[in-house]
Amino acid sequence: MIKKELIGLIPETKKYIALNILFQWLGLLVNIAMMYNIALLLARMLAGAFSHEMLLQVFMVVVGCILVRMALLYGANRMAYLSSKQVKEKLRKLIYQKLLLLQGRYEKILSTAQVVQVTNEGVEQLETYFGAYLPQFFYAILAPITLFMVFSSFDWMIGLVLLLGVWLIPVSIVLVQRWAKKLLSRYWDQYTTMGDTFLENLQGLTTLKIYQADGYRHQLMNKEAEKFRKITMKVLIMQLNSISIMDLVAYGGAALGMLIAIAHLQAGSLTLMQGILVLLLAADFFLPMRTLGSFFHIAMNGMAASDKIFKILGASEPKQGSSHFELGDYCLQDVSYSYDGEKKVLEDINVVFKSGQLSAIVGRSGSGKSTLAALLTKQLIDPQGRLTINGTLLNDIADNDFYAHVTYLSHQSYIFKGSVRENLQLADIADDQKMWEALEKVKLAAFLRQLDGLDTQLNERGSNLSGGQQQRLALARALLADSDIYIFDEATSNIDVESEELIIENIYQLAQTKMVIMISHRLANVAASDHIVVMDQGMVVQQGSHQELLAKDGHYKQLWTMQRALEDGEDDEA
Image (cartoon, rainbow, N blue to C red):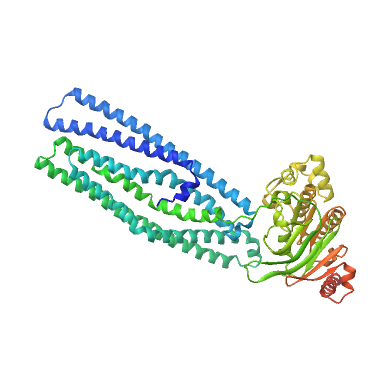
């Protein structure tokens, strides 16, 4: 139940755990001294040989011992708090830093809901593990040994019987440990599964209502909740059964020690004071181990949570390059990519993107456009073949340097809760004038001036803006970044025509001075591009300008003809 790897992860807690154990042990010594004085007083009273002065003296000792124990208890609790604080701060910081290093690839390891649950509930479990379980584990070993030494000074047999009886508690814990570990692992799996289902239903609630499928998903959620209820009940049953066994061992062992003490008292091998002392301290042999047993399920929960935390922290990070970014041709030579290591979603891609021109990537849905965009922006790494900028391998360029020169804008660009200014400052800590200039370019300035200007407050995901306004704000933010390379991945999908035309206009203006790569399903938007890459089934099937591609009876011409026919039909209906 001691995970060295976990303790080694947060070595700062060792001193707090050690002090916690020390305070508890000193409290035990104070308690022994207090019980010794009480036993001495009771023995004198029963023998009729006590005085009021002795009663006052013992009273003062007992009060003093209580005050000292209160101070030591406060010290132990303070150390528990400090170790818990270190655990929460360090673990959450480590997890967050790891997620940053994984650069959004954490979902290959754990889902977003699982990461949230582990970072919150999982870390809370480990807080208790460090603050309560670990100190109690070592104190539960130290306390019986200390009491055994005290008892052995006048009757080693009683001390030995009680000491051996104490170890029946950890034996009972070990017996249920293997079953409990599997059970708690299932508990955490079901807990995170329910969280995944809930988050998915919450995010897709609008779609569910539109298709009137919310009732069906509600039933699925109920099933997941019922599974979680059942596994929770099994965990509680396990905990209650183990507590019952430990209570039986603890109080039964203490009773056995008392019976032996009474027998030795009758035989004359034990004085009255010693017999009373055994009666007063026998339970203290078992209570520390009994308390440890009550923390058992917390420790097991902490172990289950730590497995998932180590799964995140142990994930392989993308190789960090050391080369600097230098603008030049963006070349793909024989580039292939597979998500599962078997089926290729991209195969033998050979393309060159040049600065100062607009390049477009087109193709049917599922042709590999977005996968290619993910490779170009280092969201996916380690493809087969060579992917270079100005002759330097993409993986050799330091991530911070790369992202300082490359801006990616998709149809799902995130707008954060806060002010317009705060959202724009993500790209550049610019002055207000520069921000207004960017907003003028995307024609959002007049709208925002009617509100609170740059201080206009936005809801999460910018939900108090229209879809077109959200995308315009995202474009303004991208313009402020003033990057060397811009990659637009379906940046005009699912927005109004006016916003679409405005974004396309800005993209063409950018391409006059920047390297711009635009991915679009709508060919009319890319017709004026300098270079069009046509993809089908993960391969580049054609390249050239719009006129060059139309002059050939190929894939591009088929897509163009089909889209024009559909758009002309829609115009006729209108």
